[in-house]
Image (cartoon, rainbow, N blue to C red):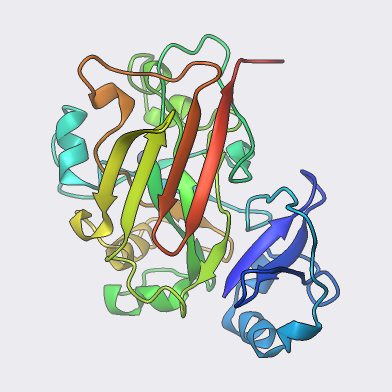
Length: 282
Ligand code: ZN
């Protein structure tokens, strides 16, 4: 099942994409798609509805982040060996965990704004994992039962803020607009092979990132289990699982984003995003 939130920023309505690819309004059925709706019981009840009776939504409304009120936006660093190499950082022996500010979340095709003083804004196509059931010290073999579904994430990063300004990476990861998510939340019953997906990202139509989730160092199940040893994962938490090679800082010479650039990216089964880069505005 492909769930969406559509409409103007801040007043999105819940919806789903039916088997014909039509957007249908779930507003009469669910208040929203957020932590309270991500458990198996509610998702099963939506699955059982007669979708033909749900109102069709015309046109092509803006899509928002497909999950409302994300509590934690957790990110995994250097989870593809070939990306660690291009970043000139050692392949980690344990997952690198950092946080992205939830205030950076936005829809899949909203513009991306360069932060004030940006020198090195960069892209990262990633597989996102949305938690559906509380997870605390869960075993790897049980971990995917705690997942509601998957989504496409662009983990935008300001490399100078991330790597040259001291301390942890978080300063370069949570700038406003640095967390496009969507178009869809694809429930886990529909995406049964999270470790067999192609990922891609182009800048101005030029291929930059090409990867496969097969080459992750730590699998989705391992990451959910691992993070749950350090913090309780709650419904609506989002974990973005690291990026394959091809980021701007890894190129010779490095390439960073400037106003007017266009990013297009996608993951097999999870849809596509398109973002125009715009200058900082207060
Ligand atoms: Zn990342």
